Image (tube, rainbow, N blue to C red):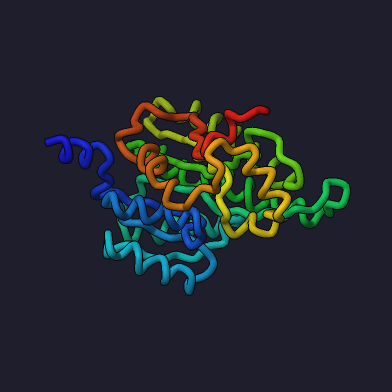
Length: 260
């Protein structure tokens, strides 16, 4: 009986989840969790080759999951993506915004082109995606869950990732504003905040000195593993989190609780 209760509470059977950035390491693990709970998962990214490797894992749970390519920095391309998914799957219930780029350039050396690139990928694309898919959720009138992937640097100031931090702080603020805007329509918007995970976009920042600083500030004394984002993802995506919106859910090994 207890197993059935928990399965029903976190079940995503009959749901469709669009995971932008799902070909990457962290969002790929989140996608596996969504598929494992019963959702049809649409992986959105640039590399079909990377997607196929992830789809093999997803198909162990749900054979209907598939890949769609999209330039998420283009509103027209996102509208086309929405149309393609609706034609194939008939509905969308969950949106994960997880695409991201990073750079360790010192503040005074950041060129405008680098600033624009990071802001466009990390924030503008999220803004456009929430706008396009949010309109669909509003017009459908059946609610939905948006999970925007934030960053610890959007909560606590971090050195050496200035533009990335600013872009993620903007995502956190956008999420809270949209949560307030759409709460009465049962459209939940939350920010999933990973602590330090050795993902693709931050490996170039993780020097030996940097790793030592991170470990000294993380009570658990280790990096997170991608699979450790799954539980938080399922909470925010499923009926188990039906009264959670506008929340920043930290998965950080205690990093944000540490002072000296």
